[in-house]
Length: 278
Image (cartoon, rainbow, N blue to C red):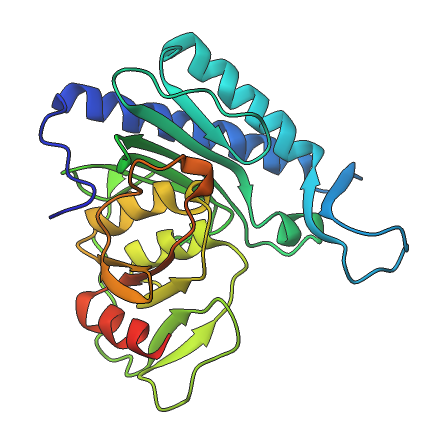
């Protein structure tokens, strides 16, 4: 079963959700670009009182919060009956139609606040726990510029409004894998990279820049949009539940904020090899 298929949803609604996600991802991207070079207010979700403590982790910038407020305002105007799951603010409950927006205004905030230019804004839509539309603004792309990868269930992968067909160079014998931790053995058929952004790695797998990627217990807002992109590009998605790997079949009906399963994405053969070595 395709976890991002939604045959019971009108095509016009799916397209509207994708176009809105695209607009909101661009909105967040504009806020990010406008903040570059400024001295930003930053707080940490994990910290202690020592100034140089290694426990200072999970930064949140003023841009994260402003972008999420703007996104929520736009959604309230257009889809006030939809639920919202965001990283920084309180959840809005899912309505009777089962639609939930999963938003991460900046995925890769640690990169962003340090000026390391790999970060994204992720806007995904779930229908009864299944990803059905998504857009990911990336600080860089296959085109060597910022842009938005976007798609909806049953539709093609797009980049800034144009269809995108991933065409990896067949002359490249060792491709790249997005890694959550230290590199795997060189015996694997890829070289590893760690970007610091799950949303970027989802988009890059969809676009063919990465062959495969894995995530250890991500949050829904990190990957909801990106999984739509992977599916639209023909990729496979696997999730680990109770020590077993199986094809991803949606985020389920448990409270969205509590979902935390490991994921592997990529072409089917590579994803299988990856999760066996995960």
